[in-house]
Image (cartoon, rainbow, N blue to C red):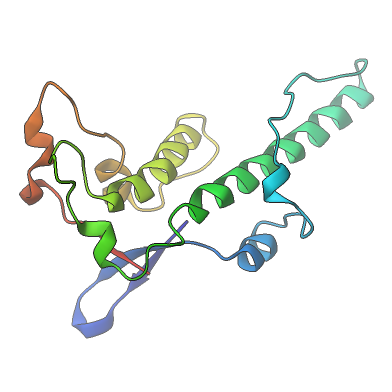
Amino acid sequence: MQVIRSNEGGGRHSYLSCYSHKDATEKFRLNADRDLKKQVTINLRLEGAGGESAAKEALRKTEEMRQYFHATYELFEQIYAPMVGDEPYYIAPIHKLRHPMIFYLGHTASFYINKLILGGLTSRINQSFEEMFAIGVDEQSWDDLKEEHYEWPSVE
């Protein structure tokens, strides 16, 4: 998932876009031969003794987690592949108890970004998106679903 900013038409505009398998592989230095259909949960336990070997094991485990994160996120993005054009993302559910699909596309990315910010591992990318997509529908407050509270970005 990436946030694209544009100044087309004289106004500032942002939209969400998914990376292709090839683009994600290049941008995030991922294993090109990864098989997303065989993705399994990784073990986070560090193996080995202390000292230098423990440091090497920590680096290896960090890289394993990074590869795992990108592979699972790529699977998540594939859920949206059948949706053609922008329109399906903005159709409100019939029951009106949930946000349109555009929210769920941005929600997962915002969740991870906000957690990485809390951990001091990254900085803000687009604060308005991170705030808008951070919180889902609160069952105690149905005004969260009022369209005038949201300015959904376009999908690219």
